[in-house]
Image (cartoon, rainbow, N blue to C red; front, side):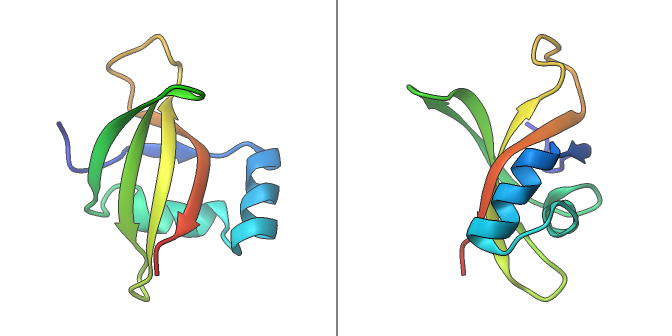
Length: 91
């Protein structure tokens, strides 16, 4: 599996949730996980939400965050475009 994430996109409703609940923006998430950032990642098969990629990344200021992504389009196993489902600060 790759250790980088290609293009990261975010729906406006998800970004509103990230701002209000966690003080995050889509730009901060991209800074931490989008190429050329190096990340740690693993697949999570959540019974409620289905399969999602879990990514641990670090911003330029050194703060870590964890992000849950789904490929877009979901039917394309080779896509390099990822949709943010949620994210939160680790520390």
